[in-house]
Image (tube, rainbow, N blue to C red):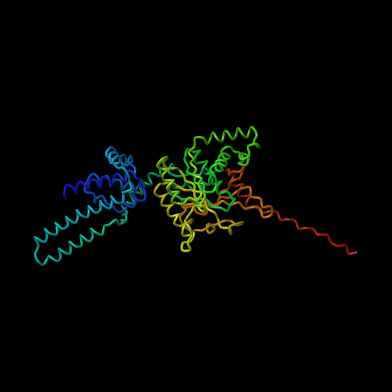
Length: 455
C-alpha cells in the first residue's frame, strides 16, 4: 500500500468512526453496524473502537460516547477528539462503503501474493487446484458487499443477559413512558421508547381529550411532549390543557365573563402549574409525514428527545394526491412505515390519533373499525379505543367513558374507565364504573290506551 493510500484509508476510517459517534444509532448507523466488521479496518485502534460501537449498538440499542468509555473501556479523550474533528454525518454510508472497498483491495493483494508464492513452489499437477482456490477466495471476498450478517447465539445471549440485568435496576422504568392514569398504566406496563400507541375513536368521543390527559400528566411529571395538532389551533389545545390543570370546565375558560372569583383563582393556579412545563405545539394543518418527521428531528437537535410525540390525527396528515393508481390505504401504509422508522431511530414514542369508520357508530369498536388502513393495526404496539355508549332513548353520553385496549403488545388487553367531568377525563373507581356499564336500562312501561265503552 502506498503512503498516500494508507493516509487516505486512515482518514476515511477516522471519519466513519466520527460519523457514528455524532449520529448515534440512526437508520444509517443501524445499517452500517449490521454488515461492516472490525477486521475491515486497517488501523488497529480504530477497529477496536468500531468493535465497541458495534457491540454497544447491538446490546444497548444506542451509540453513546460516555457509555463507550465507562462500559466498553474506550478512552473518552480519544473518542471526544474523533467526534470533534467530524463536521457532519451525511456521508456515513459512503465512508462505510469506502472502508469495505479498501479492505477488499488489501485482502485481494494479500490473496494474490499468497497464491503467487504457492504457484512458484508447487508441482505442475497442483496448479489448477491452487488457481481454483485463489478464485474461490477472491469471489468470497468480493461478495461481502454491504450484506446484513446474521447474529450468532453467543452474542445474542450476552446482550440479552445484560438487558435482563438492566431491567432489575430501579432506573430501568425511566426508559418507559407512563400515561399517568394508574388503571391504564397497570395494563400497559409502560410504553417503550420505539412504540406507536394509537388512540382511536369516533368523532366526539374524546380522542384529543385523551391525548391531552396523557400530555398533562407527562409534562407535570417533568417530561416533555411535542404535540402536532393538525385540526385544532394552539389556543384550543391550551384551553383544554389549562382547563384540565385547573379543574375548570373549558367552556368557562372560553367565556371568562361567566367565571367567578373562585374560578379565576383556580385558573391562575392551573396556569402556574403549567408555566415551566416542557410542551411544544405545532398547529399547522396539511403537513406530510416527511414534514412532521423533519420538524421532530430538528426539535430533537435543538431541545433533546421528547418523552412523547402526539400527532392529532393520521387522517389529516397529507399523504399525497390520489392519481387512480395509488389508493389511500397504500399511502397511509407508507406514512406509517416512515413514522415507525423515525421512532426506531430516535427512541421517541408516538401517540397517533385515528378516526374509526362510520359503521362503528353505536357499537363497541374493534381494530377492524380503524379507518383507511390495516397498517395502523399492524404497526401499533398499543391501540386504545375511546368509546362512550350513548343512551339509545335520550342520546345522552354515559357517565363513564371506556378506554378499550384492543391491542397491547407487552401487557394485557381489557377496558379502563374514566369519568368525563368538567370537560375533561378524570380517574374513577373502576369497580363502580364497570358495574354501571353492566346495568341494563329499566324496561319502559307499555303505553295504556283507553277502550271504548261497549254501551
